[in-house]
Image 1 (spheres, rainbow, N blue to C red):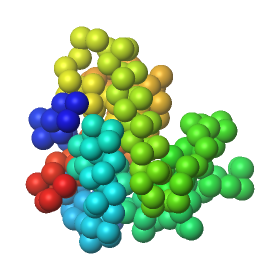
Image 2: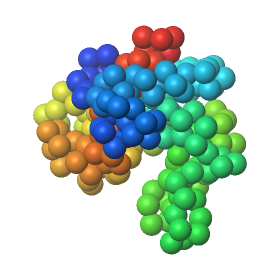
Image 3: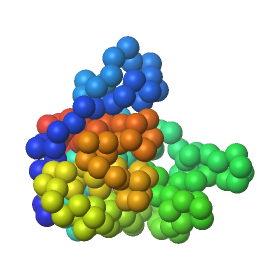
Length: 193
C-alpha cells in the first residue's frame, strides 16, 4: 500500500475508558485485540467491500476494518446506519460503518451511499487519506509510521488537534483513538485482512 505498514506502527492499545465499553478488566493492546476479535464475525460480511476499497484507496484493509470496529463495532452500535447521538441537535452526528461526521459544526460531510456500502467506505477511507496527507504536510519530519498514526488520530478529531507525536491521542475520544485503532488493525492484519 502507499502508506507505512500498519504492523510497524507503535501502539499502546486501548485505554481503560475504551476497554470498559466491553467490561474488560484490562486495557492496552490485549484489550484492543479482544474488541477486534469480538467484532470479527460481523466484520466478515463486509470483507470483500473492505478489500475493494482498500485496493482503490491504497489503504490497508486491516486499517479500514479497525476503524469500522472502533467506530461502529462492525455496525452493531448503529441505529439504522446512524451513530453518535447528539441531544443538543436532537440528531445523530455520524453515518455508516466508518461513522462519517455529518454534524455541520463538526466534519460537515454529506452522507454518501448506504451505511454499509462500498460508496460509504470509499468516503470514509478518502477522509482518512486526506488527513494522513494533512499530517504529512504539518509534520514533514515525522516517519511514515508517525504520519499514519497521526492521520488516524486526525480522522477522529481533525488535524488541528494533533500537536505532537508524543501526545497524538491527547484530544481523541477515550484518549486512545489512534493507539486503539492501530492495535485493532494489527489484530485484523494477522487474522485475514
